Length: 430
Image 1 (spheres, rainbow, N blue to C red):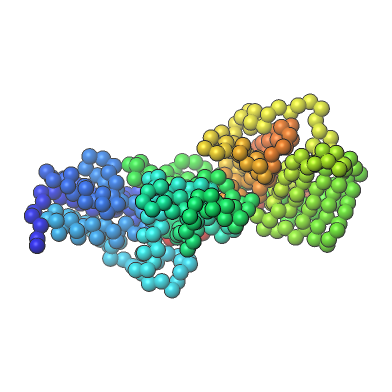
Image 2: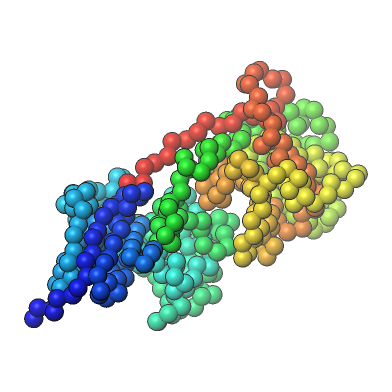
């Protein structure tokens, strides 16, 4: 049965700042009814007569066509801009799509599921407790707060984020299994928004999307140790600092033990990947005492930071170095408070110092870059580490950011300020 005519006109056009997002402009006495139908199809109001459809699966033209067809059935008048119609008629695929066996409709369904997860998180129906980087993508654990309460693990980002097959009965069970699977990579709360998620949320809030080109000069790459630099530093430590004794129980591992028997550093010669732990350093309460704190450092950690930790263990400063946050504030680093942590980021975004007061194994984290999930290198320090050492590390970190990059040249001693790593190419999103 045909619907009664509705006195409203809706025009659909591509968003000028972010393709393929769509703007719907409504006019006429029954515009409110049209806007209600558009809202049911994912459009969000951005003004008295405008609504926006912005999705992380980039399927806005497809869903706009469906919305326009339904509005026409209800008797509304619709018009689609030619450029948008061309997008609707075009067939495209995601580059490097991980499910090449899927048909176009199946790919669209995967994206629709990812969109529902995104919307549930953005609107508070799905609370994310923890996240981690599994070496390939972002994973997370969360709980649905509406309907049948479910506790799930998530895998992937943007249009590929999906629930895993296992549904847990309780939040505690889901969190415990997540910690078992991802161990030290686990971080509190949700992962930082991806660039696409950030843009989508800005559009839905009625704000123009910001880009790196529009807002700032691209951030410099963080300083990273060059291949072989850690080995050279370790050899120099034994050659020049006689208070450190060398043990090598295995071909791939060397241990440096301080003559006081209260400090120990273990180096893994086979650590290569940015997430591989190259150094494990610990301080003890006496030669046979309990461990006071420990630290792990990954393969790309600048040698200057390793040197700072070992130098502190050998000869702590006689005068208190102050507080780490004071050092970072004085150096112009930017503070940010989150529900479970506080971060300080260098002005160039190349180094970040993070404090997680409720964590035991990684109470303090210093890493290269502005996102821990994709850090170039990471230093994690447990609870119990002294404030003086934290302040010394902070001071060295500020020096790494402020100091000009030295020109590579032959050196008899290991480099404490290595040249910055070359920028890595970014993979396209679509």
